[in-house]
Image 1: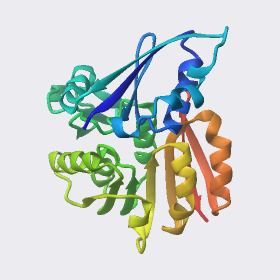
Image 2 (image 1 turned 30 degrees about the horizontal axis):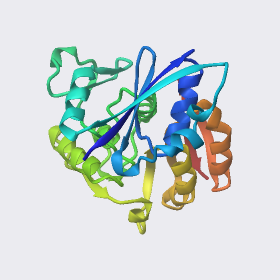
Image 3 (image 1 turned 180 degrees about the vertical axis):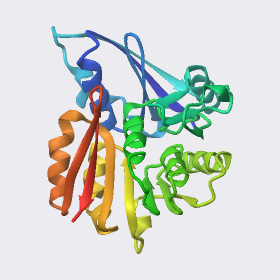
Length: 279
């Protein structure tokens, strides 16, 4: 599968990089890597509409407030993997969890260990949203048993859920290559209580969960909110991320309409995560 890499150099970098990432997320870009001058943004080639960069983002605006330069490159699957490996560093969630790749020195590990093969999937732990999700999960004692990881990416949240004590975990992603990567990572971490499925939220019909984890993007979260509420048990927990702190109030209101009560929010840089309780 070919990916599109959009290299954005923007000055000043803040706040314009964060604004661009939010806009690019809304038009299908699913992975981002910070650079000294801006960001690298990625999308599947078959989902890329170049005109949307002009009509749906600030890249189409002439402004005296910022200067921007962009380049577009096609990256074959094998080169994408090499890119991840060259940039992939161990991730430390405080001193409680370390996310490493198979080629890292295990002496670096602090606390619990998760091994993730860095491939095309989003969710290695490097992104602020994944970091916050793992931090929120590790605050549960005991951890809920029945878990949904919606938009699983690499499977990192499903893996952590099992390591924390969950024994019935469903990990879903719409991308076949994410599901394949999740299955490989589940095996790599000796996880046997998780199953990985390819599809959308309709796959959970007839299921109930004690906790739902969804690290996707704002628009998908809003569209899925009623399904999350329906499939949570009473007093069940929903933790969501994949959006900016400026989106928190909007998502709290959407959740409130589904009888999901705000519990707390997490923030890291400009990104946020929210924890809800089903009344």
